[in-house]
Length: 184
Image 1 (cartoon, rainbow, N blue to C red):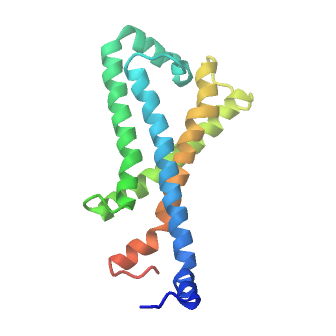
Image 2 (image 1 turned 90 degrees about the horizontal axis):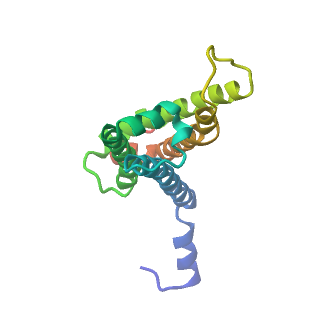
Image 3 (image 1 turned 90 degrees about the vertical axis):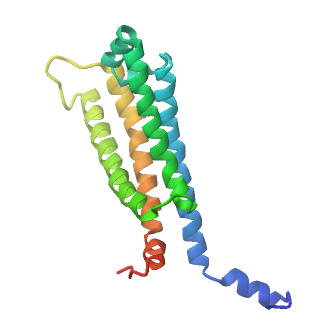
């Protein structure tokens, strides 16, 4: 134990500044990922309860389905909202060491994070290419949906996946050392 001198304080603050900085960054990334995922979940829940604002940005088929089959549409969108909310919150609980089987959840996150990066990137690029006239779909396209995918939903998926994958990457060494494995 120290006696509170300035050298004691300096020793305490100099301990692993890189680790604490990395840990803070990782924590920020998992919280950003959760926030983005919860935005996605909130819109799905809003649409599940009959909301229509921005519904056209996911496609005319969704608008028509929710009008024609409101109960089925609501149940489906409610399930989607639940899955998105769980996908957003489970990594935060894993990060806070509040979930059983953290390694299994991290494996699932390692599939999900890069998966939604790929999904968001591909769909953002394709939707943008259609809007720019680089790709011309035979039979035309739903402009509202294309704009929604190019400028809102798919960039959000991409950002969610990047933040989640960044958290996974920054916390991998801690996970390996806690399990007794080498980080190499």
